[in-house]
Image (cartoon, rainbow over all chains, first blue to last red; front, side, top):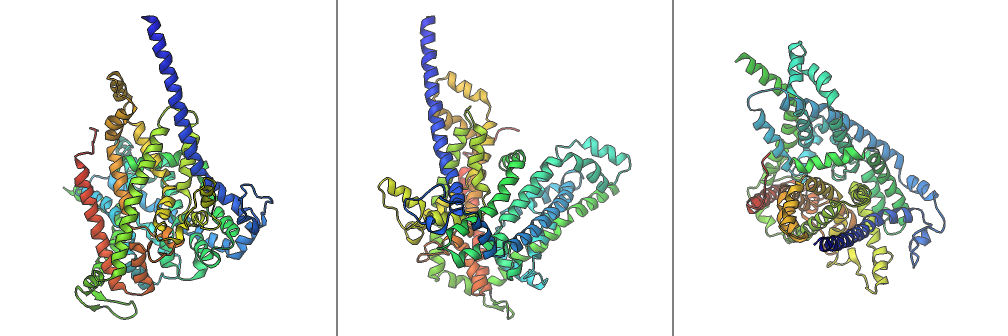
Length: 288
Length: 292
């Protein structure tokens, strides 16, 4: 009997090992497929032009052309676009943090009639697709005199987007009401409670919202395409597309160099705030 | 009673940024979209009321009808594929394996790549002459097509490009999988359930709310696809990748037909609401919400 058992467990062990090896094999194959395009981007970015079309292709450039980066950043006014992008990103992050903390506080720490009904309306606005409103928005921004400036890209962030309100509110609700009530009894105003009690406890969610907003603004393409009519105000995403439509099909090494420069900051941010990213994204899916 | 009014006042003050933004940047533009859709309006001259003419013109517009078909094909290809791929890797990553964190990072990284860089990179890799994809296919003796230059392969190429950014959904599914109670699997194992039947009868039902959520968001996203085809193909060849939003964009900003674009916007909104409603109806009985 005992012998039988041990034979069975040995075969089970073997089966486990085989399936674990199979899983690893599939994961490694997938990982190569996911990672390769990024490697190829860097590889092309560092090649001399003739080598980009050489057959058979080389993975490691015969000569590392770091000068491609210099060429790519002077072929388009890269740093000017980078400055515009950073202005938009930082202003939207500031706007988002200020507005969504205020609004989320109103939806979580103050009891008032109709609050939850209005909150569902906020959630419902997430269903409104941008293409549906982009044309009339252009007319609105035109009347406000914002077209041709960066304003259409950052001023709306001061009015709080539904998704950020939602993330923030979910977090505020986990802060015990006893804390905010106690502060109220001590004579603290609502704004004081938000600033002195709620926000110091909310650093994780503030980080997540700030990160997501930064990346969304950094990556945004359609917004800048519609509202930035003057070349001086272009963001990196728009500038890169502009560059591509002019030089596409020839200087792939410069294009890849410029592209990798746009990817790099995001990847650096990711490695510094990996945990916040993964938690934030998991939260998005689970609580929806 | 006084306390109630005071609290309501305070609440409204706190949410006022949202109220202003909603009114100015969402509600008013929606109203304007509907209003323009009944008008001829070129931005420079005041709108002229023309009734339902924009709508009746749309349904005789071959470009419009073709854009609906191509957007539909794109969505039907992209949704199941991205769902299967993301679920597949999420389930693999959920096993107790060595180097899980590293794998998760690798799968997630591409989803962070800005749309413009992603589109240009894949345009390069799909290049018919010098692209690396056709070279790799050639190694296996397969003559690769001229991906983005062929009416047959352009849409699949854009679908594949999108598939590369599936890492966000993998992370969402993985988080959901980790919440499935171990005890359910143990009970099933005692009953002699294998890997497949555990996946089919435990894993999928337990994470069905997340699948539903991803499905809805995925469809809404596909119906609005813009940046990647705009950069990779500009709608070509022969308008085979000229999707709905691209035509809407051109009507509004290239042809200055704001009324026509308005009608397209209204229809897009209706289509999205209708599909969301239908998918919700179809899946309600299959989505399992655990008591919380």
